[in-house]
Length: 131
Image (cartoon, rainbow, N blue to C red; front, side):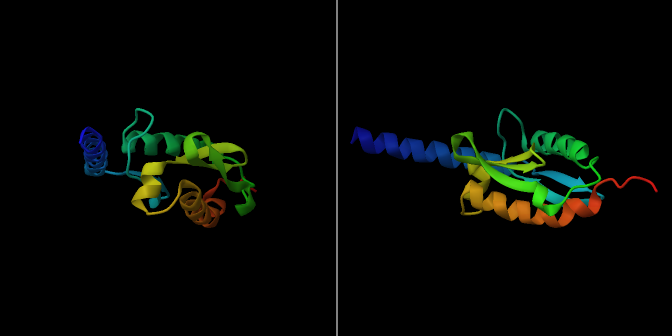
């Protein structure tokens, strides 16, 4: 009986955490007014908005490179079974388990979906040198 109660409590706590995370407004990463990523869950002590802001700062640095190619955007496994999306070996975003669970997939598979979108968008919006 005790074991069942502990399992039920663990499931309830997990559900409450997921429900709480979903009540926070998502953080949006935008380029030129277009939303390119929506961060729905807190992680690493940051709210979704704070995470989106950190990604935006990284993105600004990355977009200063005038030669970004779609092949420069890759997904790699990172600690804890999560995935990282890198642009020319610079981390842009960590795809965590909460986002993967929300989309009913794995962090690596969701990372590939996000990376596919980024491969289409980023080369079009990076800074081009003036001629």
